[in-house]
Image (cartoon, rainbow, N blue to C red; front, top):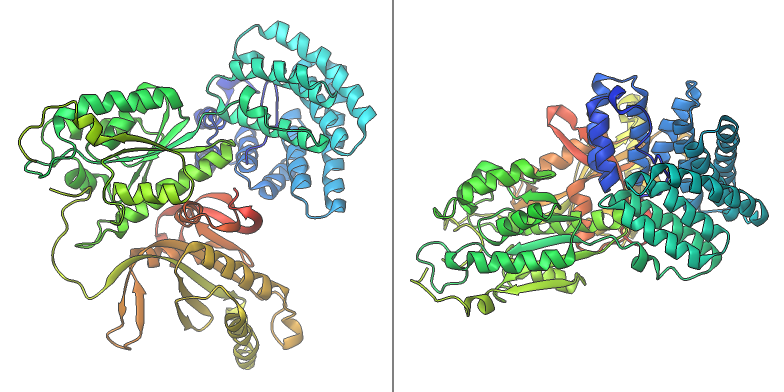
Length: 637
């Protein structure tokens, strides 16, 4: 979940904008609207050209913290401090990571240690800022010092600082006027009221702050998180936060394509376009979504994207295969309406275009089902990061629930997983339109009718290898087989998260699972077991561990012609194999696709911390990767 860090000048407003790299300004904008993952990728690329830039390094820490990778953020910022950078920005962000680590601590001693560290940094900054007359720095560090005191149950101290902060905020608000610059002092004034136990004043002040926030939903989400933290510590209800600081939902959309010529019966003839557009626009004006996730086929997809663009929302386009092929198969089949040009314009305007695979095999629909899972999971992860809800929108005739990859099956998945649905019924719209000549019968490109000896199904894949294997002496190899491989074999017998398929080669292991939830829990259990063993007592290197990489996608399933054993192979198998070599020893890394499918399927007990877009092994390109950990309840980020 994104966390609140700064107030008036905020996490991303400080410094002379003209003096920082263009990429830093882009990253700051993305952080304001609640896109820390995209911001991190920009920052990481910029740092490859300007590795010593302090602002970029500060923003890297902030992006990591907001995306949930708090320990990495803490390490990055502590390194900056240890290099001698003791400015308020660096120390404030470092203190914030200590606060987040405290809230995530499993034991009271760790919690108190990190809360104490955060308080010391904030309190020192508060004292220095007041001495220098730096109002913005003072109320930022002051409110955080007050919050740390409050969470440590030093209530008198918290009240004293919060009262002083109220006076500072009033000064800052009078200087800022009524524009967006007044957001952080107004939000801080509300937070001070919560610490002082004045909930009525807090509600009024948060309401004003929400108006000032505009579309900076990342900032608003951080403010809400801090307010919820304080209310929960007091044992008070948090229900009213949604009323006074509402963050609009994240939209997932789907719908039928415009009918191809000769389709019979008609479903979405071209003369219905303006009516459907008006219906979509009305729904979106009501919902006012932060962002939209979906594809870009000719028809409902493009209409949804165009309406979102008109209303100022973000576009996140998921394509099942490269844009040129997708346009040829899912856009250009309808020569009327300039759909191809509209498609290209939307790609240019999108916040993100994600291509998740290659052209599916003849007759295969798993690529489209995979795209549906990815877009649903990404929307869920984004909504969770913003502390808001997911909302589905379907332009649909009510049929095709049992077919893989189409509109009906996606709507069925949403309904079974509790995604609220807005439905534009094509048959109702069609009732107002005079039917024309009959117009093929599917949402998907017409499949090739050739037969294949393989199934093509979505599976989760795991690659693992033993760290330290290459350093073994010849007489240690039997010990490795007996103890290390034997430990894995015993684990496989006992664990409830069973693999469908296992292959081994030397110290490497390739496993296939039905779903990412099962694969992730297996990977974490195996990693924990191997990391806990005393290998030195067994005659092996004491630092032996495993690196484990996870990915999910469609693979070919059949029989190996040489060995007559089961075979699971394809492009996504290769992608999974490239993740494992760049995974740190003792850790479990996963692709963003793996995290998205796990989220879409409602897997429990997992936490995905964003690592960033990372170069894969053997010059295989780059992928957004996540560090996989355990958590309680539904997936968290």
